[in-house]
Picture: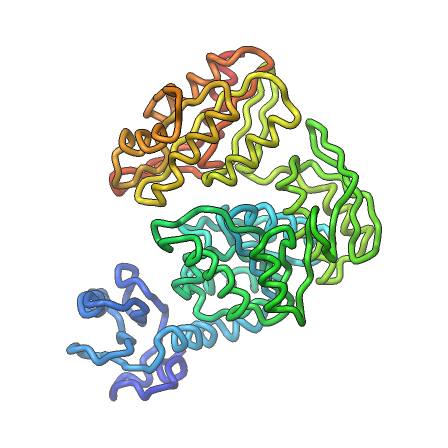
Length: 473
């Protein structure tokens, strides 16, 4: 596609109107010959990024301010121009799908996969983009962020389109909303799960964090809003978006709710009121927090036309989501979960306490260069709900693991066991747990890396658990 067909707001510099464009970028490091670099960041470093892009072979650099460089195209709104260019480059890709966006502190990944599995079970070709990467039609692409850059987003959509995907479920993080990472992309359905403390290093306070979630519904959702009526934020969104809102919950009045629930060590059952249609729902997903995820997913799928019987069948067929309350059973039970916030930890450990009366050991750490105020809160929760607490590393990034652990210990009244090496910590906890006890490993879930000192090295909680279980049984 030619440059003049991609950039229409302003006339590109003379001599390059007919240049053939082979790729679009927002990161100068990835630019190659025949590419265009869009400068979507504010800041003094734009000249350097632009120069790097040109050095790497960019046809031109698109910015909102004139730069003292050759081959610079100035536009009024870089992100709007980027969105339009990508849409044209991929043959109107953004008009090819129904988009479902999910935002909230906890539950995004599980809710996304509930929707994905139910729609797929109903014969709808669907893709999902989120924390566990992009997945569709038995294919998978790894992603760096929960919500990818818009360039990566459109590239993945182009792959999905080739396989006939018609619906895309996206996890939308608060960072992505705040940074407009998706360049104003509209969603046909928006889902709100909950808000609890996280990312205060970025947002400053809970009000700023909540505002990002509300912004998603005010600026990005063009159709229905599906909200949790058992949260203050969900009720606020429902009032603001009242003309096209459906609610779900377990405690407050809602359009979709569950009652008479029973929990088992292999799942749960409850009575579903789906806008006055009554069904018995059975699921392998355990816990009250998963009831909320199920209700959110059910509401979306019903809105998309999946009828009762198919819907219930789809819910029953869902297996555990990678890294979310993944249970390894044997003489010792080990549970892996992604919980990395105080509320997430409370949900997981609280659920275990509800169905298990024995001894619980917990292994966890906190991420470096992230919200430090949640560290002592998580230490306190672990101490209150677990018999043995083992503190270890978890993506320490540029911080020292020992400093992060010290912050966690600050919320505890009893000295925990400290084993900085995560591999050793997992092995220790499993080896020292007695038969019929539970070991809970939190924070990373299905992630396949540890990030420290600016580098990522391969690491898998799941693989370490499997090795430790096999070596001690």
